[in-house]
Length: 411
Image 1 (tube, one colour):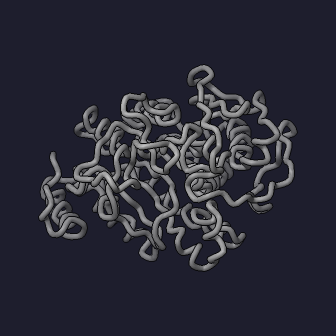
Image 2 (cartoon, one colour):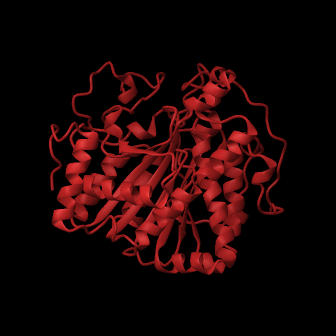
Image 3 (cartoon, helix red, strand yellow):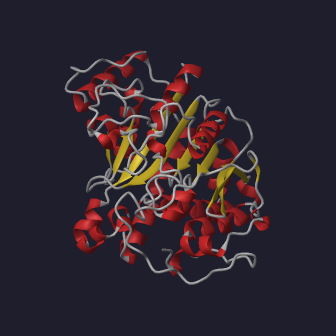
């Protein structure tokens, strides 16, 4: 739910704001039991998007306030010349007679070779806080772009791209998966190494009635996953320096910054750069709360989109520097402090009390700002000398991979 404090901008007259709906307790991961499986379809291809010419249906306005706010911010972004903003519709999804635009934002020059920072949210529909955190940063960025010369200079020399809500149908339905019951973060053509068949949380192909469904083996990637991959290939792959953060929630009691891989416990090829960026974060913000580590330290998974895209980037830009991170918000702490949340599917993944929502929305703004700055000034973490790279790689192996016992990263 959006608190009154989050309405930072006046609402255009073309957007109606009905009362917030009552929160219904859906079963964990599944949503409404026995709901019909309706397909998502695409209307048209990618193109420029004018929010003034798009109207949300009343049920979507009531049930998906994040999309409502996204349209409001899109309208304001296009009114700020210094932001150099473009709003693009990657796809149009249809479900239950309602239309859901899949929107992307681009800020800065059109040169795809410039350093780029990317933010993503809403991959899993139950994790509404991820989209809300990205929208909070977008709101701050737009306000700073109005008057702050430093922000304007950043947007003149670097690029910033966002997809705040990748899975609008899943969020509307209160599913983890999309409208076809496919888990988008298990949908890429990537097979994990040594993952037991009974580890369903790593991805399963048995039935869409169970969580973590990967989709049929012979089926193409889902519309949302394809749109994300096409967007990343177009906006990130041409850049020699790039960082991205995909915001999730639902694991652990602390906030974690994960880097690849999810498919293998072997060391990550970009390990020296990841260690250098960790040191940069530690020195710049010594009191930060993040645990920086490889995802494989906790579990393996099939079909991870960022494993797939990182390997694709390396194939095209072998000398480039791209680190995709996942910000995994420690939602178990919210449940521990307010155990009633455990009886709601949304409560397991999102803060419910207003002061915790506000704290979460402001907590990560400095991290996004630091990553954006790190793309503009990459010398501390990218383009390392061979000796320094070897030293940092040894540090990473000791820190996360058992002192170098695991397979060393391929160069």
